[in-house]
Length: 501
Image 1 (cartoon, rainbow, N blue to C red):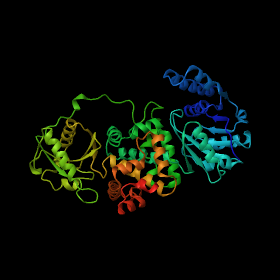
Image 2 (tube, rainbow, N blue to C red):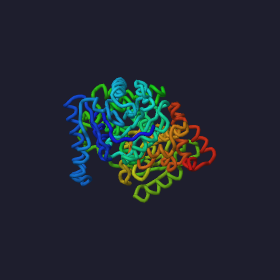
Image 3 (tube, helix red, strand yellow):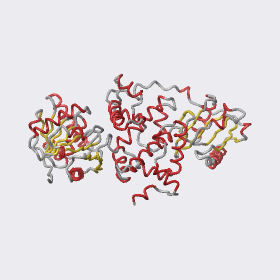
């Protein structure tokens, strides 16, 4: 049956639920907002009034428009007041037992034609729908926080969803001014299924001592071009929420990369949940020590090309360009045996080169990422002084230095390449189109480019070879290049998006 959505119920008026209520009210739809008790209801009203008040102060709403929006929302503590709603969407905590109990009640209260929707970010919509007598009328409608601002809505259909209903709900999302992406019921859907393994991997690399929190955040923000570093983003999402999404992914996949990093469990257990608790990976920062500023003291520098992951020595051109930059900045370059500092321009581990040098303690690996960042990799033989000199030298050259251990991929490659590989696997499985995946990550995460746009910019062969190097070092199956990626490189295809045209 065709659905009309003129009155919508929202259960749960926390920040997300109140935002969803505002989105519907802004679109001219009557809203019934439900909370468990009068105190929570007033807090929900406060969220809505605060959000529209901020929009008013910024000139995005007039007084009359704000009054109309607030006037469209009725507040209640009784589920019975949802009986005439055409759609009811829940935004209660991510606890399956809570959601299943609520949907049992909604099934009893709501008229038979009503659509019941869950805003879950990771739980099984199928399992929630199974508690009702109308599983065909149950869908996922996943908004992103803050709902009035974020344009993406993931519409999730189950194997039981009535034909055409997901498309009707997607049409409603467009009526709200949102961009819908319609997918089947899999843990994490598109955005969290791609985002959380990347964030979880960053936590694991921090725990393994690859680099520091701040350097990893800097590398991914300035080097990879993402709007936030992984630890700043984890704090924004909430470490408890991130942990639960990883748990949901792991329960479905049983893949190692989805198992929450132990440090996440530790922080959650300690109540350090990110911004919501005032402290997570960031917070209560120690004062800076001005005396720790590095100053280059090397009188001579040697620059050598590293060996690319495929053994071709493809980094030689980058090494020559960097040596020219050093000379232009007034640094003296010399032969390796005479240098105070040896820089190996490489995307791969450089310990093999270090052991062939007369003074291996003087060698650091260097990977130039984008226009702003340089990763400085120290081997087990690199002296602290050599790494310090390299960082100071890079600062003079206008680069932000990111320190890391000598591991395949350094920081950016180790995090970004598996993330892009996951996107290829998602497309290869038929779960979502390249266009929908790119759209979801741009609108849901604020990425300047979607994964497939990034993949084409970096180069399919570069990413494939980077993954091979990661797999060779860590022996983690998730780092093995997706078969499609391998095949495209072998076939000489330059743009993966040519497949969708």
